[in-house]
Amino acid sequence: MTKKINLITLGCSKNIVDSEHIMAQLKSAGYELCFDSNSTDAKIVIINTCGFIKDAKEESIETILSFAHAKQEGLIDRLYVIGCLSERYKKDLEQEIEEVDSFFGIRTLSDVVKELGAEWNDELNNERVLTTPSHYAYLKIAEGCNWKCGYCAIPIIRGAHISVPMEQIIEEAKNLVAKGVKEILVIAQDTSYYGVDLYGKRKLGELLRLLCKIDGIEWIRLHYAYPTNFPEDVIQAMAEEPKICKYLDIPLQHISDNQLKLMRRGINKEKSIELINKLRSAIPDLSIRTTMLVGYPNESEEDFQELLDFVRESKFERLGVFSYSEEEGTYSAKELEDNIPDEVKEDRVSQIMELQNIISRNNNVLRIGRNERVIVDRKEGDFWIARSQYDSPEVDQEILIDANTDLKVGEFYTVLITDVEDYDLYGSLVDPQ
Image 1 (cartoon, rainbow, N blue to C red):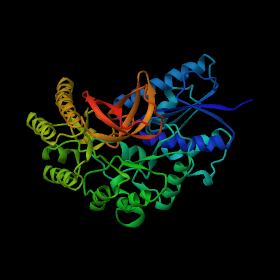
Image 2 (tube, one colour):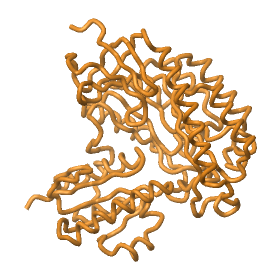
Image 3 (cartoon, rainbow, N blue to C red):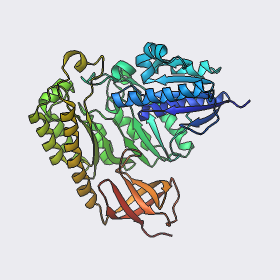
Protein backbone atom coordinates (compact mmCIF):
# COMPACT_ATOMS: atom_id res chain seq x y z
CA MET A 1 0.00 0.00 0.00
CA THR A 2 1.27 3.47 -0.90
CA LYS A 3 2.62 5.36 2.09
CA LYS A 4 1.32 8.93 1.91
CA ILE A 5 1.90 11.80 4.36
CA ASN A 6 0.19 15.17 4.55
CA LEU A 7 2.48 17.70 6.21
CA ILE A 8 0.91 20.93 7.47
CA THR A 9 3.36 23.79 8.10
CA LEU A 10 2.33 26.74 10.28
CA GLY A 11 4.27 29.82 11.32
CA CYS A 12 7.41 31.30 9.85
CA SER A 13 9.77 30.50 7.01
CA LYS A 14 12.13 28.73 9.41
CA ASN A 15 9.41 26.13 9.92
CA ILE A 16 9.05 25.78 6.15
CA VAL A 17 12.73 24.85 5.88
CA ASP A 18 12.44 22.35 8.75
CA SER A 19 9.46 20.70 7.04
CA GLU A 20 11.30 20.53 3.72
CA HIS A 21 14.26 18.77 5.33
CA ILE A 22 11.99 16.24 7.05
CA MET A 23 10.17 15.56 3.81
CA ALA A 24 13.45 14.85 2.00
CA GLN A 25 14.20 12.19 4.58
CA LEU A 26 10.73 10.63 4.31
CA LYS A 27 10.75 10.75 0.50
CA SER A 28 14.02 8.83 0.54
CA ALA A 29 12.30 6.25 2.76
CA GLY A 30 9.60 5.72 0.14
CA TYR A 31 6.82 7.98 1.38
CA GLU A 32 4.53 9.92 -0.95
CA LEU A 33 4.18 13.54 0.15
CA CYS A 34 1.59 16.27 0.02
CA PHE A 35 1.57 19.63 1.76
CA ASP A 36 -1.09 21.63 3.59
CA SER A 37 -3.80 19.65 1.87
CA ASN A 38 -7.43 19.52 2.97
CA SER A 39 -8.39 17.19 0.13
CA THR A 40 -6.09 14.19 0.30
CA ASP A 41 -6.47 10.53 1.12
CA ALA A 42 -3.25 10.60 3.18
CA LYS A 43 -3.80 8.64 6.38
CA ILE A 44 -0.75 10.08 8.14
CA VAL A 45 -0.65 13.76 9.11
CA ILE A 46 2.26 15.76 10.54
CA ILE A 47 1.60 19.29 11.82
CA ASN A 48 4.61 21.58 12.15
CA THR A 49 3.47 24.17 14.70
CA CYS A 50 4.30 27.71 15.76
CA GLY A 51 4.47 28.70 19.44
CA PHE A 52 5.76 32.26 19.16
CA ILE A 53 2.84 34.59 19.93
CA LYS A 54 -0.78 34.22 21.03
CA ASP A 55 -2.41 34.28 17.58
CA ALA A 56 0.07 31.77 16.16
CA LYS A 57 -0.40 29.42 19.13
CA GLU A 58 -4.16 29.61 18.74
CA GLU A 59 -3.91 28.76 15.04
CA SER A 60 -1.70 25.78 15.86
CA ILE A 61 -4.10 24.50 18.53
CA GLU A 62 -7.10 24.88 16.23
CA THR A 63 -5.31 22.98 13.46
CA ILE A 64 -4.34 20.14 15.81
CA LEU A 65 -7.90 19.88 17.12
CA SER A 66 -9.36 19.75 13.61
CA PHE A 67 -7.13 16.83 12.66
CA ALA A 68 -7.72 15.17 16.04
CA HIS A 69 -11.42 15.26 15.16
CA ALA A 70 -10.61 13.79 11.73
CA LYS A 71 -8.81 10.94 13.49
CA GLN A 72 -11.83 10.34 15.72
CA GLU A 73 -13.97 10.14 12.59
CA GLY A 74 -11.62 7.58 11.07
CA LEU A 75 -10.49 9.88 8.25
CA ILE A 76 -6.83 9.58 9.23
CA ASP A 77 -4.91 6.88 11.05
CA ARG A 78 -1.95 8.63 12.61
CA LEU A 79 -1.35 12.20 13.77
CA TYR A 80 1.99 13.71 14.78
CA VAL A 81 2.72 17.21 16.04
CA ILE A 82 6.18 18.76 15.76
CA GLY A 83 7.81 22.18 16.04
CA CYS A 84 7.75 25.14 18.38
CA LEU A 85 4.42 24.52 20.15
CA SER A 86 5.48 20.95 20.90
CA GLU A 87 8.84 22.13 22.17
CA ARG A 88 7.22 24.58 24.52
CA TYR A 89 4.10 22.77 25.73
CA LYS A 90 4.67 19.07 25.10
CA LYS A 91 3.53 17.78 28.51
CA ASP A 92 0.38 19.89 28.53
CA LEU A 93 -0.48 18.92 24.95
CA GLU A 94 -0.01 15.21 25.66
CA GLN A 95 -2.52 15.46 28.50
CA GLU A 96 -5.05 17.59 26.65
CA ILE A 97 -5.08 16.08 23.12
CA GLU A 98 -4.84 12.32 23.42
CA GLU A 99 -5.64 11.73 19.74
CA VAL A 100 -2.11 12.81 18.79
CA ASP A 101 0.15 9.77 18.51
CA SER A 102 3.36 11.63 19.42
CA PHE A 103 4.69 15.15 19.97
CA PHE A 104 8.21 16.13 18.90
CA GLY A 105 9.97 19.40 19.69
CA ILE A 106 12.52 21.45 17.77
CA ARG A 107 15.41 19.48 19.21
CA THR A 108 13.88 16.09 18.32
CA LEU A 109 12.64 16.65 14.77
CA SER A 110 14.59 13.65 13.49
CA ASP A 111 12.60 11.40 15.85
CA VAL A 112 9.41 11.82 13.81
CA VAL A 113 11.26 10.23 10.89
CA LYS A 114 12.26 7.29 13.11
CA GLU A 115 8.67 7.05 14.39
CA LEU A 116 7.60 6.45 10.79
CA GLY A 117 10.03 3.58 10.35
CA ALA A 118 12.90 5.40 8.68
CA GLU A 119 16.40 6.29 9.80
CA TRP A 120 17.65 9.86 9.55
CA ASN A 121 20.26 9.86 6.78
CA ASP A 122 23.00 12.43 7.41
CA GLU A 123 23.95 12.30 3.73
CA LEU A 124 20.59 14.00 3.01
CA ASN A 125 21.11 16.88 5.46
CA ASN A 126 21.40 19.39 2.62
CA GLU A 127 18.47 17.95 0.68
CA ARG A 128 14.94 19.36 0.76
CA VAL A 129 11.58 18.79 -0.89
CA LEU A 130 10.59 22.33 -1.83
CA THR A 131 7.14 23.55 -0.86
CA THR A 132 7.68 27.02 -2.30
CA PRO A 133 7.38 27.73 -6.03
CA SER A 134 10.44 26.16 -7.66
CA HIS A 135 12.09 29.49 -8.53
CA TYR A 136 12.65 30.66 -4.94
CA ALA A 137 13.61 29.03 -1.65
CA TYR A 138 14.50 29.93 1.91
CA LEU A 139 18.04 29.24 3.08
CA LYS A 140 18.39 28.93 6.86
CA ILE A 141 21.90 29.84 7.97
CA ALA A 142 21.52 29.53 11.75
CA GLU A 143 19.22 28.29 14.49
CA GLY A 144 18.31 29.95 17.79
CA CYS A 145 19.06 33.39 19.21
CA ASN A 146 21.30 34.86 21.90
CA TRP A 147 19.64 38.25 22.39
CA LYS A 148 16.90 37.47 24.93
CA CYS A 149 14.72 40.48 24.12
CA GLY A 150 12.25 41.17 26.91
CA TYR A 151 9.13 40.05 25.05
CA CYS A 152 10.51 37.18 22.96
CA ALA A 153 10.16 33.45 23.61
CA ILE A 154 12.37 32.31 20.74
CA PRO A 155 15.49 31.68 22.88
CA ILE A 156 13.30 29.65 25.24
CA ILE A 157 11.91 27.58 22.36
CA ARG A 158 14.82 27.30 19.93
CA GLY A 159 17.78 27.83 22.23
CA ALA A 160 21.03 29.70 21.72
CA HIS A 161 22.37 30.83 18.33
CA ILE A 162 24.03 28.02 16.37
CA SER A 163 25.44 28.87 12.95
CA VAL A 164 25.39 26.38 10.10
CA PRO A 165 28.94 25.83 8.76
CA MET A 166 29.60 27.94 5.70
CA GLU A 167 30.53 25.02 3.44
CA GLN A 168 27.25 23.27 4.32
CA ILE A 169 25.24 26.39 3.44
CA ILE A 170 27.01 26.72 0.10
CA GLU A 171 26.36 23.06 -0.71
CA GLU A 172 22.68 23.42 0.16
CA ALA A 173 22.42 26.57 -1.98
CA LYS A 174 23.95 24.71 -4.93
CA ASN A 175 21.46 21.89 -4.43
CA LEU A 176 18.63 24.43 -4.53
CA VAL A 177 19.94 25.92 -7.77
CA ALA A 178 20.01 22.41 -9.24
CA LYS A 179 16.27 22.23 -8.48
CA GLY A 180 15.68 25.42 -10.48
CA VAL A 181 15.85 27.99 -7.67
CA LYS A 182 16.86 31.46 -8.85
CA GLU A 183 16.09 33.53 -5.74
CA ILE A 184 17.58 32.69 -2.33
CA LEU A 185 15.98 34.17 0.80
CA VAL A 186 18.54 34.10 3.61
CA ILE A 187 16.89 33.52 6.99
CA ALA A 188 17.63 32.75 10.64
CA GLN A 189 16.35 34.01 13.96
CA ASP A 190 19.14 36.60 13.56
CA THR A 191 21.05 36.54 10.28
CA SER A 192 23.41 39.40 11.20
CA TYR A 193 24.92 37.36 14.08
CA TYR A 194 25.95 34.59 11.72
CA GLY A 195 29.36 33.02 12.32
CA VAL A 196 30.22 34.31 15.80
CA ASP A 197 29.94 30.88 17.43
CA LEU A 198 31.87 29.04 14.70
CA TYR A 199 34.46 31.56 13.56
CA GLY A 200 34.79 34.00 16.45
CA LYS A 201 33.34 36.90 14.48
CA ARG A 202 30.39 37.80 12.28
CA LYS A 203 30.70 36.27 8.83
CA LEU A 204 27.44 37.20 7.10
CA GLY A 205 29.14 39.57 4.66
CA GLU A 206 31.59 36.89 3.57
CA LEU A 207 28.79 34.32 3.26
CA LEU A 208 26.70 36.64 1.07
CA ARG A 209 29.65 37.20 -1.29
CA LEU A 210 30.22 33.43 -1.58
CA LEU A 211 26.55 32.90 -2.40
CA CYS A 212 26.87 35.55 -5.11
CA LYS A 213 29.52 33.42 -6.82
CA ILE A 214 27.14 30.49 -7.34
CA ASP A 215 26.05 30.26 -10.98
CA GLY A 216 22.28 30.17 -11.31
CA ILE A 217 21.49 32.37 -8.33
CA GLU A 218 20.13 35.67 -9.62
CA TRP A 219 18.68 37.25 -6.47
CA ILE A 220 19.76 36.99 -2.84
CA ARG A 221 17.42 38.52 -0.28
CA LEU A 222 18.28 39.14 3.39
CA HIS A 223 15.73 38.65 6.17
CA TYR A 224 15.64 38.88 9.98
CA ALA A 225 18.72 41.04 10.48
CA TYR A 226 19.07 42.27 14.06
CA PRO A 227 20.02 45.98 14.17
CA THR A 228 22.39 45.96 17.15
CA ASN A 229 26.04 46.01 16.00
CA PHE A 230 24.95 45.53 12.39
CA PRO A 231 27.99 44.36 10.38
CA GLU A 232 29.66 46.98 8.20
CA ASP A 233 30.78 44.37 5.66
CA VAL A 234 27.16 43.39 5.04
CA ILE A 235 26.37 46.97 4.07
CA GLN A 236 29.37 46.95 1.72
CA ALA A 237 28.32 43.63 0.18
CA MET A 238 24.78 44.84 -0.39
CA ALA A 239 26.04 48.01 -2.02
CA GLU A 240 28.57 46.26 -4.28
CA GLU A 241 27.09 42.88 -5.25
CA PRO A 242 24.45 43.11 -8.01
CA LYS A 243 22.91 39.76 -7.07
CA ILE A 244 21.99 40.99 -3.59
CA CYS A 245 18.55 42.57 -3.71
CA LYS A 246 18.27 46.16 -2.56
CA TYR A 247 16.10 44.89 0.25
CA LEU A 248 16.64 44.45 3.97
CA ASP A 249 14.31 43.00 6.59
CA ILE A 250 15.48 44.55 9.88
CA PRO A 251 13.01 44.54 12.81
CA LEU A 252 13.49 47.74 14.84
CA GLN A 253 10.48 47.26 17.20
CA HIS A 254 10.57 50.80 18.66
CA ILE A 255 12.51 54.04 18.74
CA SER A 256 11.89 55.41 22.23
CA ASP A 257 14.96 54.94 24.42
CA ASN A 258 12.65 54.11 27.32
CA GLN A 259 10.97 51.30 25.39
CA LEU A 260 14.15 49.99 23.76
CA LYS A 261 15.73 49.67 27.18
CA LEU A 262 12.72 47.87 28.67
CA MET A 263 12.62 45.61 25.60
CA ARG A 264 16.33 44.82 26.19
CA ARG A 265 17.14 45.45 22.54
CA GLY A 266 20.77 46.47 23.09
CA ILE A 267 20.41 49.59 20.96
CA ASN A 268 19.14 53.14 21.48
CA LYS A 269 17.39 55.76 19.36
CA GLU A 270 20.58 57.48 18.28
CA LYS A 271 22.21 54.25 17.08
CA SER A 272 19.02 53.13 15.33
CA ILE A 273 18.74 56.36 13.34
CA GLU A 274 22.47 56.30 12.61
CA LEU A 275 22.13 52.78 11.17
CA ILE A 276 19.14 53.68 8.99
CA ASN A 277 20.96 56.74 7.65
CA LYS A 278 24.09 54.69 6.96
CA LEU A 279 22.09 52.08 5.05
CA ARG A 280 20.24 54.71 3.01
CA SER A 281 23.49 56.50 2.20
CA ALA A 282 25.41 53.38 1.14
CA ILE A 283 22.49 51.79 -0.74
CA PRO A 284 20.36 54.68 -2.09
CA ASP A 285 17.73 52.44 -3.72
CA LEU A 286 17.27 50.28 -0.62
CA SER A 287 13.82 48.98 0.36
CA ILE A 288 13.65 48.52 4.14
CA ARG A 289 11.14 46.20 5.77
CA THR A 290 10.72 46.58 9.53
CA THR A 291 8.32 45.69 12.31
CA MET A 292 7.18 47.69 15.31
CA LEU A 293 5.82 46.53 18.66
CA VAL A 294 3.30 48.73 20.47
CA GLY A 295 1.61 48.40 23.84
CA TYR A 296 4.70 46.98 25.53
CA PRO A 297 4.66 47.52 29.33
CA ASN A 298 4.99 51.17 30.36
CA GLU A 299 4.72 52.50 26.82
CA SER A 300 3.60 56.07 27.51
CA GLU A 301 1.71 58.28 25.10
CA GLU A 302 4.96 60.21 24.66
CA ASP A 303 6.80 56.98 23.76
CA PHE A 304 4.13 56.15 21.20
CA GLN A 305 4.13 59.62 19.65
CA GLU A 306 7.90 59.41 19.36
CA LEU A 307 7.48 56.14 17.47
CA LEU A 308 4.75 57.61 15.26
CA ASP A 309 7.00 60.57 14.40
CA PHE A 310 9.86 58.20 13.60
CA VAL A 311 7.69 56.15 11.21
CA ARG A 312 6.48 59.36 9.55
CA GLU A 313 10.02 60.66 9.07
CA SER A 314 11.65 57.36 8.05
CA LYS A 315 9.13 56.49 5.31
CA PHE A 316 9.88 52.78 5.46
CA GLU A 317 8.99 50.97 2.26
CA ARG A 318 7.53 48.03 4.21
CA LEU A 319 6.31 48.06 7.79
CA GLY A 320 4.29 45.74 10.00
CA VAL A 321 3.12 46.43 13.53
CA PHE A 322 2.11 44.10 16.35
CA SER A 323 0.54 44.68 19.72
CA TYR A 324 2.28 43.22 22.75
CA SER A 325 1.00 39.97 24.22
CA GLU A 326 2.58 38.51 27.32
CA GLU A 327 4.57 35.32 26.76
CA GLU A 328 5.23 33.13 29.79
CA GLY A 329 8.87 32.66 30.69
CA THR A 330 10.06 35.90 29.11
CA TYR A 331 11.64 38.79 30.99
CA SER A 332 8.65 41.08 30.51
CA ALA A 333 6.20 38.42 31.71
CA LYS A 334 8.23 37.84 34.86
CA GLU A 335 9.38 41.38 35.64
CA LEU A 336 6.93 43.85 34.05
CA GLU A 337 3.21 44.42 34.31
CA ASP A 338 1.16 44.18 31.12
CA ASN A 339 -0.36 47.57 31.92
CA ILE A 340 -1.48 48.92 28.54
CA PRO A 341 -5.22 48.30 27.95
CA ASP A 342 -6.11 46.23 24.89
CA GLU A 343 -8.15 49.03 23.36
CA VAL A 344 -5.13 51.36 23.61
CA LYS A 345 -2.91 48.75 21.97
CA GLU A 346 -5.39 48.29 19.12
CA ASP A 347 -5.70 52.05 18.62
CA ARG A 348 -1.93 52.41 18.43
CA VAL A 349 -1.69 49.61 15.87
CA SER A 350 -4.38 51.34 13.80
CA GLN A 351 -2.68 54.73 13.96
CA ILE A 352 0.63 53.37 12.72
CA MET A 353 -0.94 51.32 9.94
CA GLU A 354 -3.06 54.25 8.75
CA LEU A 355 0.11 56.32 8.54
CA GLN A 356 1.99 53.50 6.81
CA ASN A 357 -0.78 53.16 4.21
CA ILE A 358 -0.16 56.76 3.19
CA ILE A 359 3.63 56.29 3.19
CA SER A 360 3.37 53.11 1.14
CA ARG A 361 1.16 54.70 -1.49
CA ASN A 362 3.41 57.76 -1.74
CA ASN A 363 6.47 55.53 -2.13
CA ASN A 364 4.66 53.57 -4.82
CA VAL A 365 3.65 56.69 -6.73
CA LEU A 366 7.34 57.55 -7.07
CA ARG A 367 7.82 54.28 -8.98
CA ILE A 368 5.29 55.12 -11.71
CA GLY A 369 7.14 55.42 -15.02
CA ARG A 370 10.09 53.31 -13.89
CA ASN A 371 11.28 50.19 -15.66
CA GLU A 372 11.85 47.42 -13.13
CA ARG A 373 13.12 43.86 -13.36
CA VAL A 374 10.58 41.42 -11.96
CA ILE A 375 10.16 37.70 -11.42
CA VAL A 376 6.78 36.08 -12.07
CA ASP A 377 5.42 34.05 -9.14
CA ARG A 378 2.07 32.83 -10.48
CA LYS A 379 -1.00 33.51 -12.60
CA GLU A 380 -4.13 34.54 -10.73
CA GLY A 381 -7.39 35.53 -12.38
CA ASP A 382 -6.83 38.38 -14.81
CA PHE A 383 -3.20 38.96 -13.86
CA TRP A 384 0.27 37.56 -13.75
CA ILE A 385 1.60 38.17 -10.21
CA ALA A 386 5.21 39.34 -10.14
CA ARG A 387 7.67 40.92 -7.72
CA SER A 388 10.60 43.32 -8.03
CA GLN A 389 13.81 43.10 -6.02
CA TYR A 390 12.15 45.40 -3.49
CA ASP A 391 9.58 42.82 -2.39
CA SER A 392 9.77 39.42 -0.72
CA PRO A 393 7.23 36.67 -1.44
CA GLU A 394 4.17 36.23 0.78
CA VAL A 395 4.75 39.34 2.90
CA ASP A 396 5.29 42.26 0.52
CA GLN A 397 3.78 44.05 -2.45
CA GLU A 398 3.16 42.50 -5.83
CA ILE A 399 3.17 43.82 -9.38
CA LEU A 400 0.12 42.88 -11.44
CA ILE A 401 0.55 42.35 -15.20
CA ASP A 402 -2.27 41.66 -17.67
CA ALA A 403 -2.80 37.90 -17.94
CA ASN A 404 -2.99 38.17 -21.73
CA THR A 405 0.73 39.00 -21.78
CA ASP A 406 2.93 36.06 -22.80
CA LEU A 407 4.89 35.32 -19.60
CA LYS A 408 6.17 32.26 -17.73
CA VAL A 409 6.25 31.56 -14.00
CA GLY A 410 9.76 31.74 -12.58
CA GLU A 411 11.16 33.89 -15.39
CA PHE A 412 12.52 37.44 -15.18
CA TYR A 413 11.12 40.32 -17.25
CA THR A 414 11.37 44.09 -17.44
CA VAL A 415 8.09 45.90 -16.81
CA LEU A 416 7.04 49.53 -16.82
CA ILE A 417 5.19 50.57 -13.65
CA THR A 418 1.96 52.17 -14.90
CA ASP A 419 -0.27 52.55 -11.83
CA VAL A 420 -0.29 51.88 -8.09
CA GLU A 421 -2.45 51.22 -5.07
CA ASP A 422 -1.50 51.39 -1.39
CA TYR A 423 0.16 47.98 -1.44
CA ASP A 424 0.18 46.80 -5.05
CA LEU A 425 1.43 48.06 -8.39
CA TYR A 426 0.48 47.54 -12.03
CA GLY A 427 2.95 47.01 -14.82
CA SER A 428 3.20 46.35 -18.54
CA LEU A 429 5.87 44.32 -20.30
CA VAL A 430 8.67 46.35 -21.88
CA ASP A 431 9.56 45.35 -25.45
CA PRO A 432 7.58 42.08 -25.51
CA GLN A 433 8.95 39.65 -28.10
